[in-house]
Length: 528
Image (cartoon, rainbow, N blue to C red):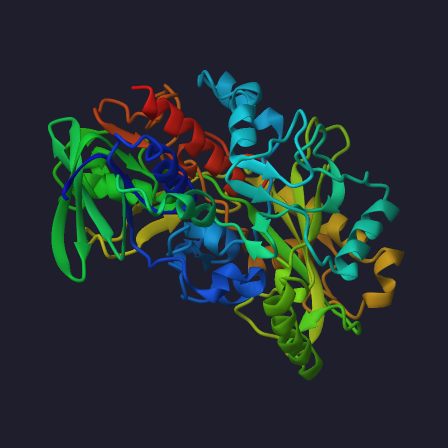
């Protein structure tokens, strides 16, 4: 079959939701295209498997940015899931929606239907909250949200340290208040990862009206004038086409959705002409407005066996944990490593938290690509609403080539100022009494004390914490790519539904909001 009602490009967090929801109607023919393989790897099912996938090219696009002036000319790292489930198959499984302010702000920017009151039903619809339903949470949805089965006392000590610093305790970051420190809930079920593929596609695999094609690289949107007619793709080195009678929906993510639009001749005229691409539709905002959470990590060595590390004892503990996990789906393998954290304000007069903390029970250095044969832990701090704006463009007209990624980190002084404040606050927490029994020396920052030294360290080591958004933004201004119904401006039969449509970056992890966007998009599409 080469004709479908809907073609969805990208089997990540959004694409899985769309394919699952749209195919609930047996009269609707749906085709999902995913460049990566099926989600059968044990490194996906086992939560701690992210330690193998995030720093490597296993199930991971493992992109690099262009040299970043704000990071002393370093090229940043941009891991993205290359597998059914996308980044929800390799991420830290943290379930965070962001602050209600973020969505109310979207609505004020000219996006009706996207206030927090508007989107909350879709968050609740998507969710099976193991704690039960209430005004903020739902049950019975595909995405299982749970407390960690075997929490590490070391991670809890970080929460205690935050309380000693007079930060409020928060037992539900998705509840009435976001500010405070506490434990993260995770997208897990019975001690296993609950990716978007497991949540939304696994129940749909037997549907005759849903085709899931993996190992398929989309190369171009097939256009007839301003109408999307289908998708050209490569599979096993051969060129093919698949056609849509209703709509093509792009869900390839904030890095690759704009790349595919540009390859199809949709975007800024200067960019298209630079690469010799025929202009099919001028849309200057394609690939612009890239936003990402800039993050710095402070690692410590630890004498405690609760800290993970590549030591003989740590390896033995990990081996024992594998057997426990296989037997009872409990123990260290159920950890997402980043078990606790918080949302804090760099200045007390701020209306909403502007910094997020992630505490990791292992040493993370350069995205865990630099290995230390020692036990330790660390804390991340990121700027939640950066002012810097970057872009996505083309390295070449070869669709197999990686996109040109320029987050433009720390281009705005305000972002650097916020990260310096976050560094100082995070260090104060890490030096609090509650962590004293576990604390060794600072691994990388022992001699970093003055503001000048902190800034130098940030420029030497800071990078993404994996939340790129905004490159096909929703709105009605000259740089908007989609309208509030997620239809590409000036086009017919073409929508975008993924993190690229966010006009501004939300204050938190982006996987749950991406799933919400897809839930809302599926409803919009189904009523057409």
